[in-house]
Amino acid sequence: MTNIAFIGLGNMGNPMAANLVKAGLNVTGFDLVADNLEQAEANGLNIADSAVDAIRGAAVVITMLPAGKHVLSVYDNVLDPAEAGTLFIDCSTIDVDSARKAHELASESGMLSIDAPVSGGVGGAEAGTLTFMAGGSSEAFALAEPILDPMAGRIVHCGDGGAGQSAKICNNMILGISMIGVGEAFVLAEKLGLSHQALFDVASTSSGQCWSINTYCPVPGPVPTSPANNDYKPGFAAALMLKDLKLAQEAAQATGAVTPLGASAMQLYALFNATGEAGTDFSGIINFLRGQKTGQK
Image (cartoon, rainbow, N blue to C red; front, top):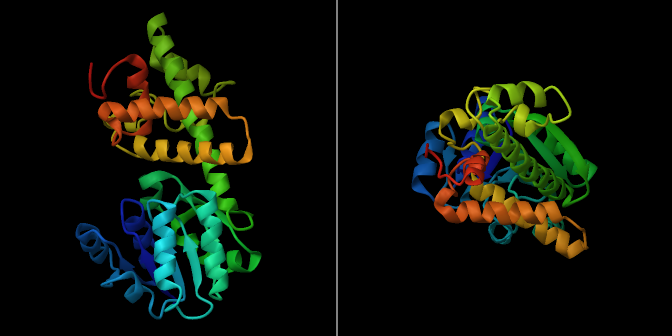
């Protein structure tokens, strides 16, 4: 049985690790938050007292952490005590430079590594249907793929180290922009007296179709599983969308890419977060476009 260390057991990490346990893998977890550890233990994980303890005897180390500085800090602590040849898989969404640095640190320590951020939110993590965007060598990806499979609906090898993070921030820039566009269209439709269902029936089957309307429609009714039908509970929180849009803009500035819509989306989500909606699903930005707070009629 493959021994896996899973470091970072928050809203995404805990259900991801639980799916590995369900697949028959031996998973030892660590997190700084006691409640997360309690939930992880209930999910069948072994609980370690530290990240270093978690990785002892592990063939694979998976991290799911908030930012690049956290990933690099964990790597600094655990690479030396890890067994030679351990596979490191970072599923966090972090800046590309930090991802490449993590690969460099792993390689210098004789380890294989993959950056494999995810798309699909908490629902995808619970259902085991996440999309993984992987960056790293072909050798590392071949080893990582069967480990990721119990958590995944799709796994895409995007290229060398850092390519997974590059794909993630580009994808989520599209998502942030498209959700604002869909929200604006529904707000305009309301002003014109057009029903939500009528606009959905047209746009979801014609040139306006996109994930933000077909799967995650930001108004109640047309897509029963969307957060709009549950008072915009995430889902994918507005704070996380803002994080990803900031990462995209940092990359755009570093590379000289022209992304005016991405910059505008970042500014709008910053304003939305500043109104106290950071914990609201990102699709709730439609209420901001209406000049309302989430839940306000």
